[in-house]
Image (cartoon, rainbow, N blue to C red; front, side):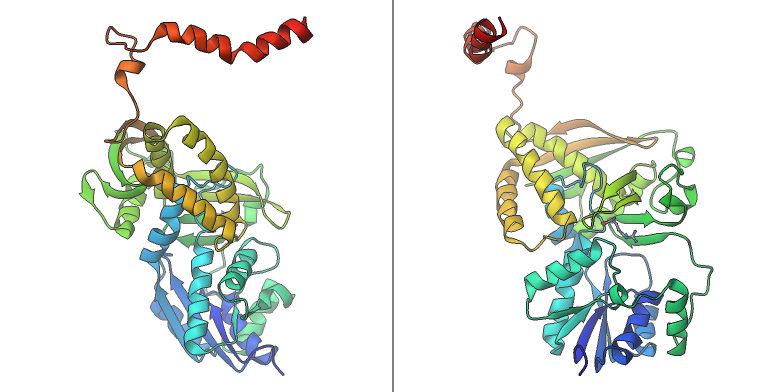
Length: 400
Ligand code: ARG
């Protein structure tokens, strides 16, 4: 008896996921492996990948163009939540996992598979995101993770693949482990494992080195409707085109790099380099527009929600009831978050230099220090008396 009859495998075309195909069949008695490659804008040709799965022993090789869905249903809600894990990482890799899980679960239903599989090892966050998302979407599906159990080194994996006609990587494989999609690139391992070592310029692909950035700034005006970015410099763009165009504009000025040591869910600290030009600027611009359109209490309360929301995305809980409840809170807050933010891009920095909105709560005659001032200065005195009363009483009675 095998572990499953028919399996849908998340497929990237790399050696590890390719080796999963014969491994599932030979070692785990799976009768049929269907592969699914999700196109999330990783900038690779998926035609050869489709072919490769078939020569590696897959019975069906699916390619799903999920780019638009990725931006609309995963990136945009995350921008509305200003989601930054540990205040820095905009979750570009993490956001892709619940979508891939959904594609796997849907394909399993369509092809009558009794299991899905992925090539994650046991040390990362991605295995958690896949397993938990799949369980949330269809708890009766088995999840197989060969690379978590096979215990083969890189060399052994390549040798195993060669027995089944899977070619070993042609070019000398890079020391880095890189995950890429439309939203960004995540780079780890190799020399980066030493947190004291500065990353080499060669690891970046979406952002220019400061030395190569223009000597004049660029300005970009981003329009938001209910917290969703809809146009750049007055030109309406669909979600995919908007992110694509903004990645170029922002990356050109060397904006969007992050170098951090982060805490993985499985308890390991890891040094990660990210570049996520458009996503980072969209979050900054969105947060800036909120400062104009949300009341102080909603804005302050939302910061706590954002922290939880970011952790939930990072920790694989995209399809969980708490996440759904927080989505409802965030959606409600976004009703007034429409308007325009003006961003200046220059030498590695994105500065928010202007913002406007029809729903602006900014009130010039309250804020001004000029003659038009309508603020009742006398009222401040009484307010401060009451506000400070507990502190005054404490000081008199206790502090002495
Ligand atoms: N640490 C990041 C995360 O958990 C990115 C991991 C991406 N994988 C990679 N091979 N660099 O979301």
